[in-house]
Every structure is written in structure tokens, then in C-alpha cells.
Image (cartoon, rainbow, N blue to C red; front, side):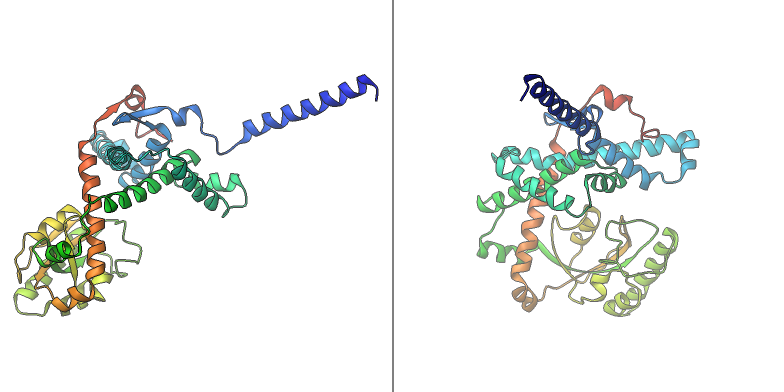
Length: 348
């Protein structure tokens, strides 16, 4: 073959390769931009990328300030922005608490085995879409991108690794006799609940926890809860009131109620429940879920024996959650210049 023909063919192949590489670099929907990766906060020495912060802000803004008119009123806009910033900062603390607690248990969050699991999860997710463009578009609907999704999956894998590490090294109590004593003590209580859902949007309001209910305003829900409480005080049966008025699917199908330890519920409801003595009814308690009336009941020994394994599992999960909450509260958060320059209202 003529040397010039050979050079020409090699040049053509190189040019095609360069063009292919350039095209891929320009159109890769999974590659984060420099802005996406720019740190907006520093949590316990870990950089929080703008893409994660943006996703949390937009999701929170959609819920807190869905009414566009809020932004036309100076005080309402200020209140909305403060609420969003506070909620997002708390969400970020909770998110990075997993990574921070991993450090205390000598878990390398970038460990090859952990990252292999993350890659497998991401591959499985992407396989559900016809191509990477469709996958990226689906993420964007939830204000996410591939880099944020990867970080979220890394957090989940690290959380699972941390949980089993704490179980295995005794950081969470697993001795059967000790746990039996705990379940039989006031560390566990039995609670029945009548829940009336108001205007709030709850993470559980998807049919898996609440029954389809007649919509109430908050004032209507509170007033109905007070009326139901008065009916109980007048002598009506609590279980019947749960059946007639309760909007918690769990309670309407489970007359045993809840067996609780600290860390299983939100603090407002837990504080109300644990303040009661046996046979005492609470006042109407307002929380993110709605308006509740709690009745503390005597524990049923037969129920405890039949469900001891499940109660232990609940205790493990609650202990893990409390450990993360404690770590979250202790984390130092530093802002960057980007944090101060970004407008909550104008973010897109």
C-alpha cells in the first residue's frame, strides 16, 4: 500500500475518533457541570455540591411556597425563604450525618465494595429507561441529576453498612434477655391513636398509612378531634371511635395499637405518648400528620411474646435513628460564598 494512502487512512481514523470523543463529551447527559459540583456548604469537612442543594431547595420550595403570590409580599417572601433555608439545612445535616457517623466506625465511604454496590444500583435504575437521556430527564423531574443520584445511593449503601456495623459491634443492644427487659419496661409503651388529617401534606399520605379521608381544613380537623375526645370522656369506647373517626389505616385495621420505644415516631407525637400513664388520654396533639388523640394502654403479654422479634427489630431501627439524629445535631456547617449569593426565589 502506498505510504500516503496509509497515512491518509490513519489520519481519517484519528479524525473520526476525535470527533466521536468530542461528540460524547458534548452530549453526555450524565456528566455534571462545574456549577453542579461547586461546594455550597461544608459539613463536618465534607463539601456539599450545589446540585444536591438545588434539588433540596426546589423540592422544598414547591411544597412551602407553591403559591406564587407569596413572593409578591415582602414579609411572606422573607418567611418562606427562611423556612426553606432552615428545612434544607436540616435535611443536609441529616444526609451527611450518615457519612460523619461512618467515620466514627472506621467505615470508608469510598470503599471499593461500597462503590461497587452503588454502581450496581445505578445500572439497575438506568436499565429501566430506553437510554441515558430518558434516565436523566426522569431525574430532572425530581430536580436531580446523575451526580446527585449517585451521592444519594452512596448514602443509602453507607447507611446500611453502618447499621449492620453498629449491630455487630454492640453499639445497638442485641442481647435477647436485655431486650426482653427493655420491652417489658417503660422504655416501651402501648399506644392507641385517633388521627384526623388536616390540610397538611404528609410523607405518608399516599394510601399506605392514611385511609382516604374527607378533606378537612386544619380548623375543622382540630374541632373534630376535640369532639371525638369529648365522646371518649363521656364514656364511648376508644376502639369504636377509632373505627368511626380515625383516618390512620394502621389503627383502623389493628386494635392492638402501637408498641413504641423512643426513636420510632416524630418527637411531637412521641413526647405526647410517653407523657401518659396507663389508661390516660392525651389532649389533641398537632403534628405534621394531623391532629391526634392518644390513649396509653396496658401491654398485652401474649402480644409481646408473639411479636417479640418484630419489637426487637423496631428497637434496632429506633436506636439507629436516634444515633443519626444525635450526630446530625452535632455537625458543624459552614457556608460558602455561593450559598450567600444564591436566591431561593430565583433558583431554577
